[in-house]
Image 1 (cartoon, each protein chain N blue to C red):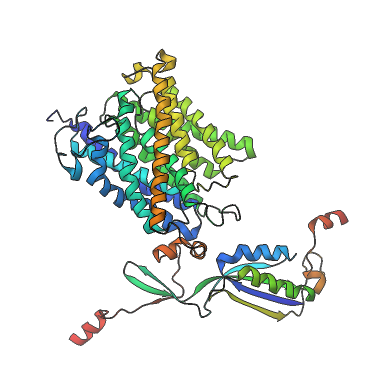
Image 2 (image 1 turned 90 degrees about the vertical axis):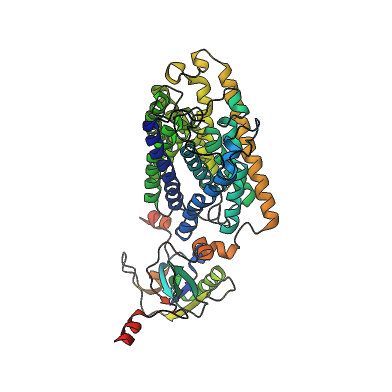
Length: 428
Length: 124
């Protein structure tokens, strides 16, 4: 356990962890801009909640279920309650176990926050907190174990550099299950439900991209070749998605949309996430361009259906993650990644297992999430009432408003309210 | 000729709009106002500061209509705005002295009768 610790890698990984942690409030901003103003705080808080809830579940049980050797399906209990996590080198890396733990924690946090996009503007916040605790215990760690913790997909050579299976497809297909289990917003399909602040959406997407350099660039746990490749591919792929999205927008309506641009940045970064350390830079650019198409088509189609997967987690994360996972099977190149070749470089076997991962990951996420929500539904109210939904979640669930000028607000004097001026007068 | 003022819950705005359009009432103004009409005060807390929100957000419709449209307008405002809870709002009906359509200089009832833009185009 006492391998060599590399100070450069350790310094980078501390930075990368902080970058990934910032992606969660960035996601909150992105999501908050996409909802109506009366639900701004509630939507943002669903992401903020992950910073608390998912960190605790990860520390107590999640990390062990993901990264203890265990069996092919799920890890064991060696690291429960943060036991046996110290300053020694994490096996296979030159960074301390504690830092490895923190970096991986930030992944579980953002993934739990991602799922919230499916249930905004209607799900009761207290129930959502319990859902999030269960989801970050039962769904994310299992899928992380499959591809990173010594699980069955990893054993069969499935390549997933930064989380196409446990992060992107898991959140996307869990979001689909959550949207079906919770049901559509009462106004969905009856009224135009417009994003209330597109500037938030653009800024959130920009901050997400910024954080993604830590997300992908840190997933090599080093400052080595694969990390540098992942880092630079994180620049290249979303740029291509962005421009292809512009073209698709122009073809559809002769106008380039800002929300489309923000979505494209996320889609591109998602697409390159699994592949970033495995494909050449020019292949990453191709992947960025390709990833735009299924997500674009799906998102345009989805809004015309009764499926109120409100913020398109499936379209943006699920499908782009799927595209990235499959892309590895074709374009993985050993001369760049030092690990394996894909179909186009003479090794067709990899593609088969990438396809298995692209089926098994979503299936587990969908079924597991649906089951969790069905059980919760039997135990506690899942949604606020229709009247509360129309008043808005901020006032109903939080007793606050995002935008208030204080007009008409009367200060409530508390019993035992301490009057500083009076006590000073009395002293004179 | 009357001016019908309807003050409703902002979350009922879309329902009122729907009811007005159904009743063929197509000319009106809408503004966001704050007011107090006896509903329970909402309590909010900001960093330990507890406040009672004494003013509630409302939507104010102003509809100038010829006499035969007064009752349909009132009905539309009520049907669209009603939830049955305290705070649904009020409708006020005022006499209207004069109305002028700026574009044509038409007066009174002619001025408050909405034109169909399609008819107007055909007349030209």
